[in-house]
Length: 220
Image 1: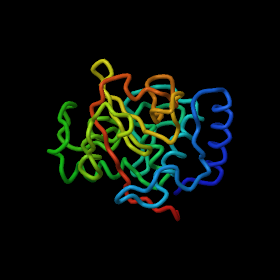
Image 2: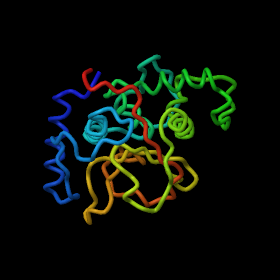
Image 3: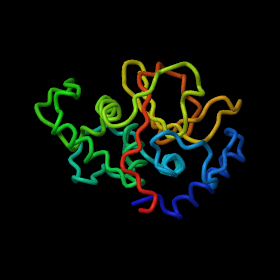
Image 4: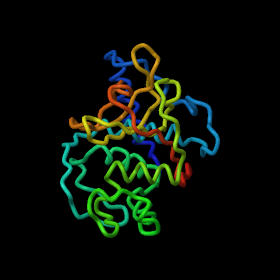
């Protein structure tokens, strides 16, 4: 299902309160467009993904990478638990895009294209989509793999960025909020303290930069 009016309203209220506290320079969530549409982008995608990502910051989530058996398709770990990939998975699911199903189907058809670091002999829908290296392959195969640069203007709202954090892969979503100096878009991610909106784009080495629209339908 799509982003609901209730979700938009709750996210807007939370962001007004947050911005009044001096966290960053806010951009208007209610605007139809805060960045011009890009080639191939369904109308409204960036706004919808931004709202869904920012709404994640309203949830109390304990960082927990434990392997769990979950439903398929549309499965999820308990809502009070999650890791960095779950921020991305849950945000996209609000737009009607089930990364669990999509990654699993792609791995079934192209298993050799995915990393083998976990010793699996076949896809596992309980965990595959929750691993950053697998998402990197999926986004590169089915979206746009963009250049990794040190220019903040190259990283736009709706983009997905991955990092190397002391040898561990990490992922977050760029959103339509700016840093205090107005030079960088902020990131929604979970590095251990739950989903957060932070100015951290260049805090760690960037390993990947992607743009993925899936089959977004703003009418859902």
